[in-house]
Length: 509
Image (tube, rainbow, N blue to C red; front, side):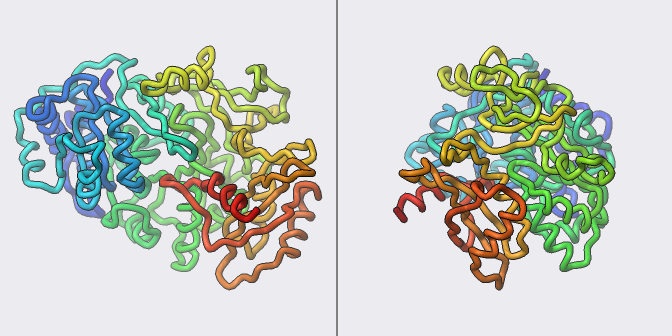
């Protein structure tokens, strides 16, 4: 089944319903959205020779055109290669080359930047801001989405690549079908009256959820800013109503901070799904206190997009269970379309409460890595996705992330999980951000180092942070060194780059 059929059906049922919005302004109804995508698909096939299974790269900021192009590519039976606009043009060009894309779709400064990269030179480029692009709306349209099998690749997603080159994750029409239906059963319900706000990159999690809202013929809203602006969200939500959005934990923290200063209580917000990084317990408690019961947590990877576990809004607001705080620090329960276990190096399930690697089995799990059979064999064994994330599962099925296996610190032969130390430090009122890594040590093997970003006006105070840790965790887990930074280094997806932090320590040695 071609996922673009959902757009066709929405257009048939609700042709006059608002589909694409820029801020509060309607750019296209569902009838117009589908007509435009069909015209663009005709241009892709006839003007640019894009055939079934071929790749089209998209390198630009969030826009309503982004959604038009993606659906046009699927209607034509081709594969979308969405590239995070925060990447360096050289990184984007490498992805274009590795994917074998035959066409680039871009706009603005991204168009100029990618055109200067030699590895992308010679490929045709469509500028979505051009008159030529607008003319494609009325091109000889494709009659309907090309029939696709569940195993055909729809979305070629490149991992964040915090170490080495990113790998191309092949997500099929069947994977996307499973991901979308799982949203309704494990994350949230969606309706025709909802809208989804693209404050996070369409190339990533926010775009993955676009299918949910197309299937329900709901509104797709790209903010005027094109990205995340807490003030803009606070202004839009009460006017648009029933607003849903995907956000990284750092975005949630910024939204809560702004809401407190503006006296905003969450009016108009329906659901904020958060994931993509650690949400600390103190932060989500404050978020619920300020904005109300509007939050759902998901845990996923590009290799099983948005679909590994979920922590429902009911569980997030529950304060009656004797282990509610422990559950709030988890990433929830296995979503409906997957099986999740915690296992040892041999893939054998470990007892409840013991730390192991999180493994996932189910229909949303990727087809494999693009032209990288060795990495596919290493990551998917007997159908099980080895996530590389370490965690525990309690007797009720709640999964708690500890860290990536490579981030675990071994000091004096004892395993120390950085997140536990980070959670303790974030309870101190002076700490805004923290990331903990291991530093090589000739005696202990590794020692614990905490990189700390202080709240505005706070003073460096190692002793106070030591006391904070000793009140909550074992003495041997306490950092032996604190390094204060104005901000933590992050990649294009907002994830902290612990490799850079380790590099800083290497320079200091």
